[in-house]
Length: 188
Image 1 (cartoon, one colour):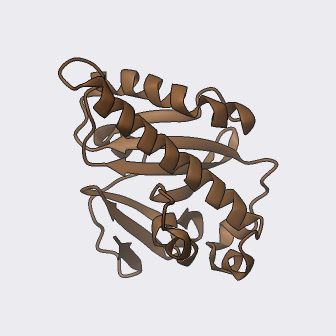
Image 2: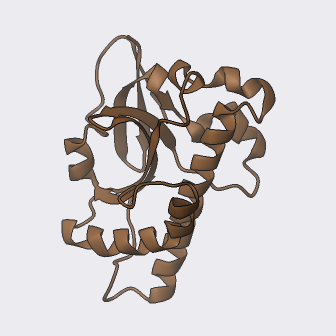
């Protein structure tokens, strides 16, 4: 099994099986369309009790505080940017799986090509490095509110949006220290 590590915002995501990780930001498709299109870093297939889930992941090295000293405009701009990236990443993942961009479907990781879109679930995850745990809930509420139209129109779970810090991401198996495996490729 070949694995991949992705370095983003000072965190090392993975290792993920290369067949389960769509590095969207570095994909040839996104490189062609990047002008004016903000995108989240990756989509990762995760198996859980409820079945297969595609986790769309955006990484940030910091964020405005959800309340208190930061001005509301800065927080609103941050939430709008993150929600736009997650929304676009979900759409480009679906469009790629559906073959909407020609031969680029063949460049998807193997398990994305065979994905049964009718049965898969989706999660939209923001990982903020060094974020205080008690800041996550208010930030998650703001992000969920911004993504509510997408959650509803796509029929996503009400709990599909999550904001976590790097400690939580490590517990969820999303980030780790860089590995030394010979077959692990680091991208970033």
